[in-house]
Length: 524
Image (cartoon, rainbow, N blue to C red):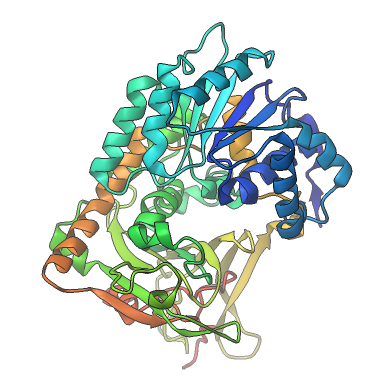
């Protein structure tokens, strides 16, 4: 059974006319995700017919060569953003929106050109997208302010979008927020995290708060622990220049994984509006227990992939990848335990892990409920009660699965774990998307619900900082603290020891439809 999404898109109004400026238009983000997303929004008539998209970069392009460059890449690599062949007729219409300005975005001259483009657009609305290295965010914001391009007049808007990373530690995140807020209001800043554009992430809120079944049990009385996993099969690929300075922790935890933690752990917001929802998320991250450096070292594990076999092919280790420093002390895997010290979650551990070159691509939240009381089974052949699990998979097979205990057919009382759930693809005819469409549309319409606020960013880094400090102390003492793990496996031994110390085990990577253990029979 499936439900078409066409009616929903027909009823969604197009965003107001605006001009979108993309700084760093020559980068991979633009051709892989931003332009395909805008193409899809245009396909669904969700952007104004007059909207213009202006790329800005140092590369030598004019409008025609910029359009041709993007079309060639998208046609070869995306096939209409993973949903069939490129529609030539649609592209011919869409590419008329695309324009290019060559220039250095640290030079005042390019901002004078931006002012001229806005003046000729028929609308004073402008969206500035920083698809650049994060070190340029503050400079671009100051240049825009200096040129008067952030001033909002007569009900028209000026908005700035910045991609993660939002700093590389607590101090740098605070500095970045201060720099941005010095020249614009929080309402003008859109800190984008593409994880929050995924349907399943947003469905966490609907599952919790629109179904009476879940919310009464969503607390420490019934939940034993929660695992959040973001596993990748890819290696560092072409990102060595960035990744070797960042590592798995900075690249994934304070943004992607903590956003998933916040979505699953928040209190019911007063309303599903940006202010209410973002306030609750900030409270949750602010309630994460601040470990000492000794505790952070004890409650974390780091790893780095070594050569191994993945999908029946040999892959190199991280230190053998192009662009990686041979003496690198960068982790490609991190596992950690955090505690949320509020009334709902006190005593419930959250186990987070993320890594590259793991056995399967899998981003999921695994919620383990406390087992039912054993008392009534004490005179039966049932030896123990198994836990129920709720698995929320973000990618690749978006959906939710619940496993519970049922009696095996036969004369004796024996139990097995059985599963039920849904995959989005089985219920909805989803359009071809990149994951950015919802977020870009929200930028254009002024909905900040799925974007991070300054205090949320800083609370996330505040929770991460003890781990960074602990690892820095190890490094200063000449201790690597990084274990090797073979590509195609699920991280180093220390990650398994981390959770086993608490009498628990990781849910198996890639097994979205259950807890990754064999069925639990009543008779052993």
